[in-house]
Length: 81
Length: 102
Image (cartoon, rainbow over all chains, first blue to last red; front, side, top):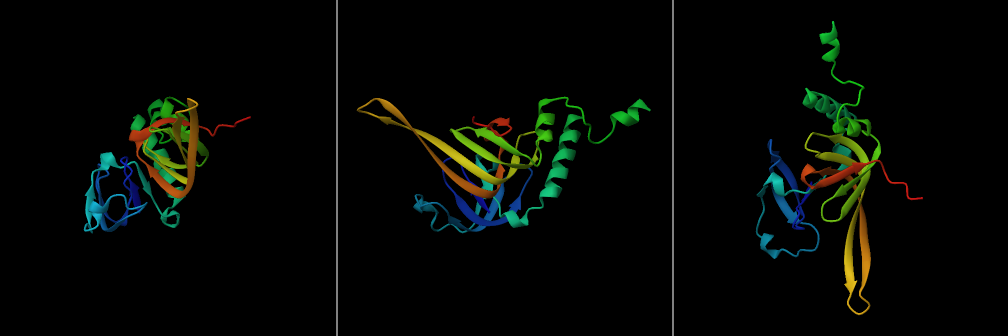
């Protein structure tokens, strides 16, 4: 689990929780990409505001694509109504 | 009777732009993002905010370097592949079928 932020800070960690705004709590984090941001060295857990997250990289194995696609279709048709 | 038909979960008619994206589910698409980024990947899910989940993604970041002496602009692009990616809708500018460069 690897959220990439628009200021080019990439954090790797374990997903602890997510809320309706897609705010993310990560535990046991490490900074991916060259550690240009040494001020994160002492940080183990963090809360990230959903609005600043650009991408979240997910491990492909844990994703059931069929379920996602069905959910997306239902979500889309519900939104129309 | 007509009311029952209207309440069907998924309709096959294209009524609004998001329906066009629905037609692309499980297909490869091209997504243009802010900050000169482009993604090509297989669309697995999306919502009305244009948050998307893409699989087998190739991201291209394009930067322009200016050669001071020759006053040329050099376009550089870097690509990398990501197996499964959630993209926040904030950054999405364009969604289209993959471009076929002839």
